Length: 218
Image 1 (cartoon, rainbow, N blue to C red):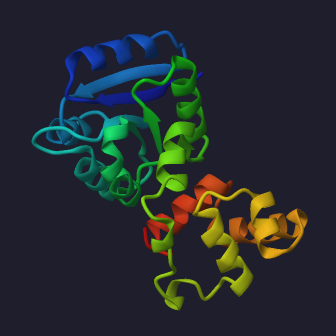
Image 2: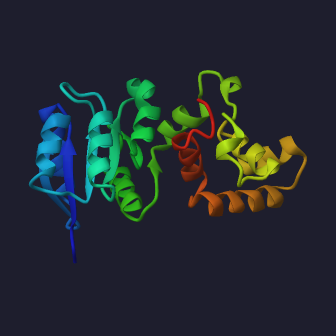
């Protein structure tokens, strides 16, 4: 069985060591390198190419945002999961735009970390539930949500745009149905169309697509 090659990038030695020890408990993972900042990580890529990177956001010399952007420019198939703390909230959207495939809190359990790795390696996005709530649901002011223009949305119907906007304010399908006076089944149908048009696999991926492609203003 081919192992998942993982690199850990974080400026705290003890955290890297603890995370590394946890990952070695899995027979499916091989840690091929560590780095304490973005510069070290990019140098590492010159000699060792991982399948997946666990990337800290705030680091000296070069942060995780710039390191993620530069790494994915050169190696677009690389999977990157951001290691996050709630204090990093101002950087979440920058990391999404840089191309991060998921976020996991540093205080998360080992089980959640392994699930995040499994999902991202399967081509999905992964966000800790607490972080998803912070990123999508607990926006500073939901009234600032608005579509930037029609140039990026020409493939969406008016109803699909409406449903996408409401999804991005954290509403469930049932809540959207009640708000628009339509059935939940109708909402799910529009969501299915949105998934197809954007290549998204679930609501989380759809919202990330909207943020990455600046279909909404946050």
